[in-house]
Length: 201
Ligand code: GRF
Image (cartoon, rainbow, N blue to C red; front, side, top):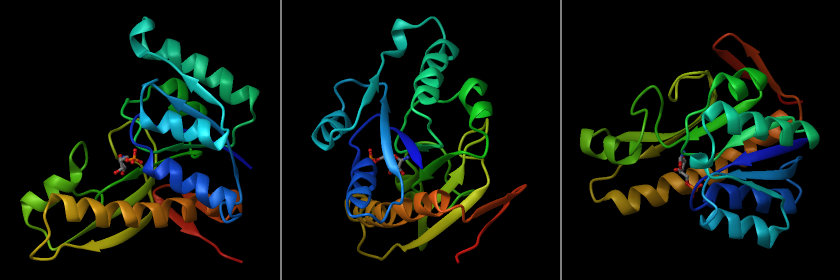
């Protein structure tokens, strides 16, 4: 089972996937990193782990569809089964969304449908909710709107600030995301419209 990770930034989620692939818990091979920021720290992480990178500059293309068609060719060549978005800061077009319908997942740092979009951690803190968390969902054409696969709760305590909450959220992400990828790799995920169930053997 082969996955491609799409990321644009720090890559802490990418790193947790690499680590769990190395210790055999992922059940999948990370065959490619796709990144639109050649200088991003995630690229160095991929190099250290010996993972191939497809790096591109969106500005060098006339449209999003143009670079996505190139990415699609790379994915086909490597026989990629699942696209795993991990802090990929570009919106996707139907070129990839339709090609990988039901086979593309994203992680978002809130309990969706609360706090979609950017700065979800700050949004939750400012709103004053007492629980927030992380969501792994299928990717559809919208912004953080696809069917929910798994969620993990994170409590907001009175003494939390943006940094401590980010830490808690990132720890929850790094625990949850490799687990969800392993469910896909093991064929445990069943999709029926928006109701997704996971059957463990
Ligand atoms: C994570 O918080 C993820 O939920 C969001 O973007 C962030 C990426 O962080 N989609 P990193 O690059 O994995 O460190």
